[in-house]
Amino acid sequence: MRGRGLGDRLLHAYTWLIIVWLSSPIAVMILFGFNDKKSKSNTTWQGFTLKWYHQLFDISDLTVALRNSLVIALVSTLITVVIGTMLGLAIGRYRFRGQGVTNFLVFAAISTPELVMGASLLSLFVSGNVPRDANTIIVSHVLFSLSFVVVTVRARVIVLDPSLEEAAKDLGATSWGTFRQVTLPSILPGVLAGAMLSFALSIDDYVVTSFVNGSTVTFPLWIVGSVKTGIPPQVNVMGTLIFGVGVLIAIATSVTARRRA
Amino acid sequence: MRRLTPYLLALPSWMWLGIFLVVPMAAMASVSLQTGNAIDGFAMTFSFSNYTDALSRYSPQLLRSLLYGGLATVAMLVIGYPVAYWIAFKGGARKSMYLFLLLLPFFVSFVLRTISWGFLLADDGVLFGPLKSWGVLPVGFHVLATTFAVVGGLTYNFLPFMILPIYVALERVDPRIIEAAYDLYASRTAAFRRVVLPLSLPGVFAGVLMTFVPATADPVNAQILGGTSNTMIGNIIQTQYLTNLDYPTASALSFTLMAVLLVGIFIYAKALGTENVLEAAAR
Image 1 (cartoon, rainbow over the protein chains, first blue to last red):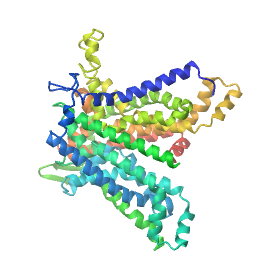
Image 2 (image 1 turned 60 degrees about the vertical axis):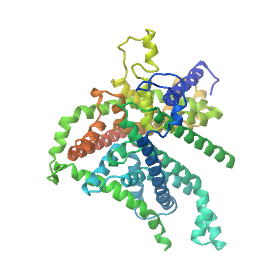
Image 3 (image 1 turned 30 degrees about the horizontal axis):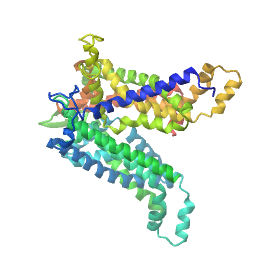
Image 4 (image 1 turned 90 degrees about the vertical axis):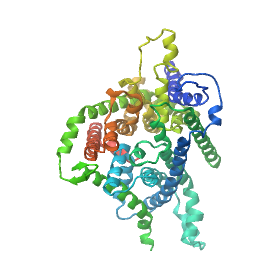
């Protein structure tokens, strides 16, 4: 391409402008976790304090909501990773009857609007008189994360060299031994990426959860429920901590991936 | 045994997708044709009038959702394309850093992000408060509870989903093709319009799909950033299901929404050409 003209420099500045725009609400969230607010609402800056970090768990139902979110994300991720990896292996490795329908269902689960998914699940639970609680939330979260694990695992399975597994079998490894010592290590990056995605999707979900939660409250549900009365700064602090951990994990993964490459 | 392996591997997911994706759709279809109330229970009466009743009551909200979703999608395309273009062709060694920065908002919960955004736009918040006290803006100026706030929130929340697929499509464009266009005396505009733009269309298609559907069906932005005159269909469906316990109306509205979105995608795919769609779907 031609040299760095005025147009390129303008586009460069424009890209940074968009990045700043996208990040500004995060900056506000982090900043107002340090706000020494006296009034009910947390919208004007009133001085720096660390007291919300000390009183992080003082609002007991908020703490319960956060713990619910973490437990639900953990359990649903475990289920999703196990059954999603199995399906990813099946689709990526074998030719079998019903593969077309399976691919369609995987695609449908990704592309169904969350609202419709939540509404249809509630229709099922209402029709079947199923009580709504943490279990129905976990079931729903597995449903919307499953396809993401299948897709990331399948991408690794496709590029896997089958002669490696044959070599393991020739050397006397059992099927399970071959899977554990050869197949799993080579598809592990895909499995981990899928696991992180489904954890993130689960802990973030509001729409589907709002249909199937019954009286169980998760972190996003608690936040939306307290919009009218004012979001306490503890929510900002929790958001900041989740953000920090997420960014650290992302950076650590990309650094180790680069080192391995 | 070996021939059974793929079926055994697929079985748990089949059951999950069958019981919790396919059966619920059927349950919703059934509920949408029933009559009754939450206390006495619902009975199947094949009342297709549920659909006509729901539509005559809530068509303004449905149309508004399509309008807001469409406006936000166009805004994302216009705002996002230049960013994807610059990163793909000029990002150099820092491409992945720019992508990471664009994805930073996803490390914050969707509802919290929307609330923070509303917080920035608050009437006397960090942005407008000082501007008002300095007299730059009139005292009555407000953005929250307007169409602009909701469409802006949708644009803000889904923008990375537009940028990423366009970036992927542009990144695959062989620079030698563009050089060839220049060698054949194409101007910069002509090279862009006749070479780069057509090659990026599958990315644009994927980006529009990934943003229009969730933006149209989103209840969160209208609830947090909008006022009473910005209610979208997602809010209606939520209220009918969760507050009014009017399951038939809510199911009928959900189905209508999905049907409208599917028809919209189909028309859009037709207009853009089937090859592009297949290419986009193949990724």
